[in-house]
Image 1 (cartoon, helix red, strand yellow):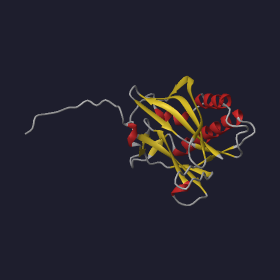
Image 2 (tube, rainbow, N blue to C red; image 1 turned 90 degrees about the vertical axis):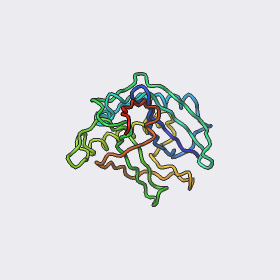
Image 3 (cartoon, helix red, strand yellow; image 1 turned 45 degrees about the vertical axis):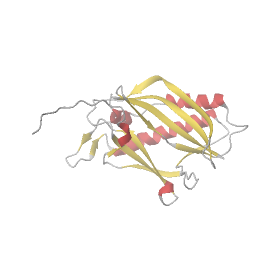
Image 4 (cartoon, rainbow, N blue to C red; image 1 turned 60 degrees about the vertical axis):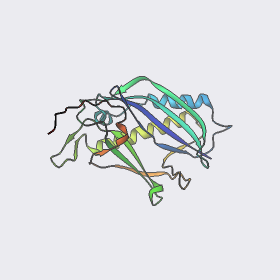
Length: 214
């Protein structure tokens, strides 16, 4: 048995990168092994998927989707079985001016019927442009619009995999390397509080202001 780890790849300005990494569980086995041609086709289709307007509004023009990586991994060992990395034919930038730091993110929570941490997953989408309420909550775009566009986007990834491997179905899932299980998603949800992903500040050059002291 195996599972599929999809990485959506992007850049933040000229110095940083970002990615999200949803997991999909095949409903059957890859016939005769994983076809590299089919895997390349799936990765290219995913790299060129349309991004919904609310997700692009979250990104700002400082963030760009540049490609995709698709990995097939062994369900028991997590070992790599197959991989394809493809660049987007036309990189897709977000919309609007960047008003928030690169670490800001809107989080999609993936819920399964498996209790505990092994049954929950999170996807950190860049949130660099947003309007907030006076209480510091997300106002524009609304979390309702973002979760609808995220559902469409994840469904598009699933469809791209199914088109490349037509004898196999794929389910959005959560992968637990601790329990070696891949429970399927039954719900995704997005709150209206901005989160952070600290590793998104990695190579960002910083300018300092200083004064003598005392």
